[in-house]
Amino acid sequence: MMTSATTNTATTPSTFKTLAGKTALVTGSTSGIGLGIAQALAAQGANIVFNGFGNADDIARLLDTTASQYGVQTVHNNADMSKSAEIEALFAFAAETFGGIDILVNNAGIQFVANVDDFPPEKWDAIIAINLTSAFHTTRLALPYMKGRNWGRIINLASTHGLVGSAGKSAYVAAKHGLVGFTKVSALETAQTGITVNAICPGFVLTPLVQKQVDDRAAKEGLSNDESKRALLADKQPSGDFVTPEQLGALAVFLCSDAAIQVRGAAWNMDGGWVAQ
Ligand code: NAD
Image 1 (cartoon, helix red, strand yellow):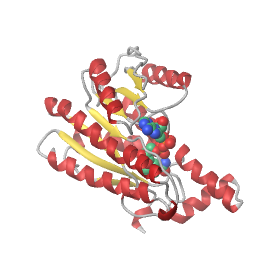
Image 2 (cartoon, rainbow, N blue to C red; image 1 turned 120 degrees about the horizontal axis):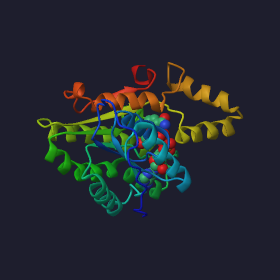
Image 3 (cartoon, rainbow, N blue to C red; image 1 turned 90 degrees about the vertical axis):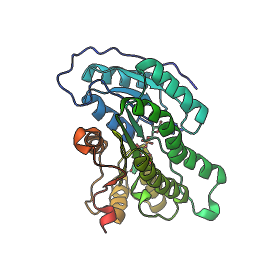
């Protein structure tokens, strides 16, 4: 694991921002939903610990742009969220840099599609480790900082698949249902504190993870990219539109606000009507 990071000192004084002075760790934030949430939290003044994989130059640019655009500090650590020792090193790094974590967004996730009798056991283990077990480790490591300040926000990126099943996605569905359950227990254990724990359950968001499903379907059914996207949405998402990382970022900002202090142990759908059917 590389624990080196780029630190950008704030260059723009912030006007009043709801999360000024807070530090947010967003796992898997070098792309997709995690990136959208990290940027929405930064826009409210939170310093960001980015995590996730990617090209070093792209990540350096991301840190610089976010820091200068929002006047916050940004660092990156590429801990592999399937490895508990790397998660512990990530927290040591965050503590050294910022003195702890106030907001934890458990977002890193992967998916693999195959029926149970064809599902490679090592893929099952990897999906459970990254999508579910990592949240146990990050939560247990974040809580002491949050309890010390009697303030904290934990947001777990579950999925529509944390609420309903989908053939071919056994490990993913099991991990996301597990994450919704873990959210409830963590929320109950912190119910009388200033720490809240909630889950967000997005429908389809057009990130690299879903683009792969679009590509696979296009190849299998001889569809164009647009036809494959429309077919995916038509199957599941009544609005006919993808959810966006920006919309999910706005929901995360709400869950971090004082107004959301009584929102505890909830699983918030943002899915274009998927689970209402
Ligand atoms: P993405 O593939 O665009 O991004 C995943 C991020 O996680 C990247 O930054 C990647 O580098 C990082 N990552 C992958 N493996 C990692 C590991 N072992 N350790 C650390 N980081 C790792 O995915 P996305 O679509 O933005 O999904 C983000 C989360 O939202 C996931 O938990 C996913 O299950 C969930 N989700 C996505 C959708 C969707 O439609 N895209 C819907 C519901 C839920």
